[in-house]
Length: 578
Image 1 (cartoon, rainbow, N blue to C red):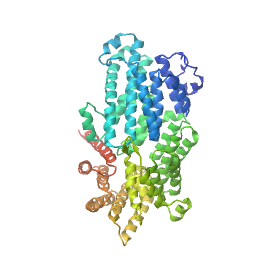
Image 2: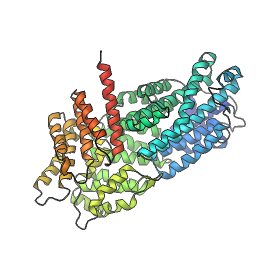
Image 3: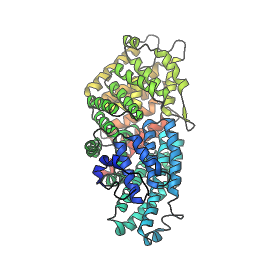
Image 4: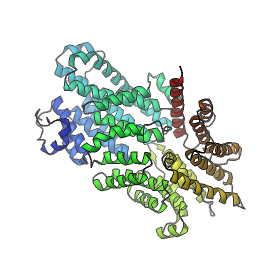
């Protein structure tokens, strides 16, 4: 492609996508510009056009290969569907082969002096080849992490990124040495943006891993510093490189999802809003941007605005149905926080019908929501709640040979319905809300928190009045107390919350099935003490949960949350020290 083909200013790339002539040659600068055009197409919901633009060159150009695989990885990361993950994995392997052809045979560090002494165009091509190769390796590792939260998968992912980690360190060294020689060139700025994306993402990802995995990785030379990773990504967002928006999207994903599901809420909604703001003007109808805007509204407790945003996101494009499924998932939860169960059911039904990610979780979720509805409302749906719960176990799937932890949880809970006279689950939709960190969002709204508390206390009263307690009675009572404690904490009633949590701990020896309740309650009690400023007690409860319990449901997820919370305690302790 000629040098002038995409020479418009970056701010106008989105207007240039329909004026790109057919490529006849592909140098490094043209490849970067065309990949930038493809990225703008994606952000304007022109997903097929982006792939069509990259496809002719993706086996011959490192940046086309990287861009092509990036779009498919993005799709797989959004859907979590096995088929999308397999397609993305196969594409990454091909992209790695393409990048490999442009790499120097010996290592970057070993050839650093020769790289810098040779002609710039050759030197730059080799430098960028290392960067693109490392980025493809990082994508491959990310997909390994996406597949499930089992420890083995994280270790496998960690091993896969060993080469990527080393290349990024080498590229960082090249960047430092080459800074004086080429700091004004566009190629250098693009290279620098790529290094910041890689070094930042890598440090952030590794810093999230629980200590027992980190010990294994550190033995192999890995290390991860969350603050350094975040700072590199922040610097990457401010540049004008191809990777600026990718640094922004990585930070948005961390602040809006990772820090909640695999952390204790260390993300910054304010920073995420500031990062998103310029893209709201640049891509006002872009589905990815609209989705994050709605998610941020939900995190602020503005559930009405969030619902409107998700629906606009669905209506704005019809090409990537996977984005619709993400919105349906969020709409299901947003209505659940308000206990608008009929609306939540509608979106659960859509997911059951359309999404291939996890039929077991969707069917369980639908049955759990129906369990919260009145008999009259359930009758209107024509559903048989018991029959739905009985389907769950047969729908369980395996990804990369491993079961999804949340599926295993749903299967175990639904087994209560296998009996001829099943004992209904208590507040199953609220229990799943907790598993997915929903109380953090519902807790932003006093009206939602109080309404949830009323529902929980009604269940508590029903259990108290039960004249023929079942074998699940103690477990159900402890679940109710933990959920009640969460609501009381968010309602600003910490002493009452503590009573609920300590009730669960005092019942430990009588719990028969839901053994996860004790370590999770210890963690919640630790968070409660952190909120009250007693960091020593907070750390003691969390260390207890981490060290003295194993083989319970959602164990990996809790270890991630504990790791994040303990790190946060250490950081605040360091900040408070003279």
